[in-house]
Image (cartoon, rainbow, N blue to C red; front, side):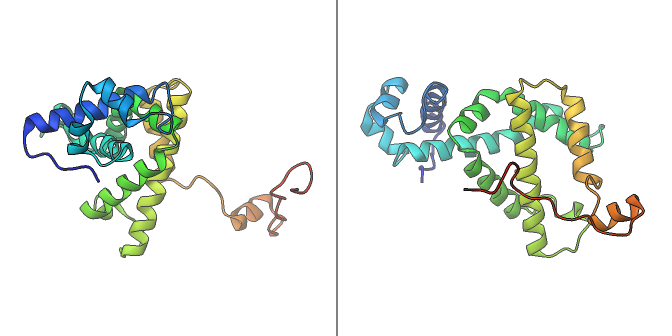
Length: 215
């Protein structure tokens, strides 16, 4: 684990190392980057590096946590007691935040690091109980965890795809799509489809492999 800083100056130095790693990750994978190269980029001696981190993987965790915690600071200017909070507005702000940190998200994606990002996000939401009161299902810990995982993984996948397509749709449109996915049934059940077809019969399962059996 990376070390918690006790002074503002130490926190700034630690964040500088994190920022330098993210810059390097735009051109290389995390496996290709060495601690020596990172220290040279950050202009810090190796001894100073190990005051803050045990390994370069710890720098990645610090970057992920910084991304998660930075969201609250980002929301500050947009919060107003006069303006009622809505799910759609929250989604719009998250999309804006993702656009603002597009390079960081892309670096995580390129290095297959979105999974640990999502894991940290899930644990953060579970600890703060964020979203529990919005659940329509039974209010138990197992269901809450499953719903949190479903939402975090789903939204991250949609936002990642959106950014890889150069944010082709507007923030407003993407917020509307996410809101629909989160709050309305998207797929019909097999029973509903059978009733819709007028046959009353559930259609046969389609093969998972197209063009022949797997080797």
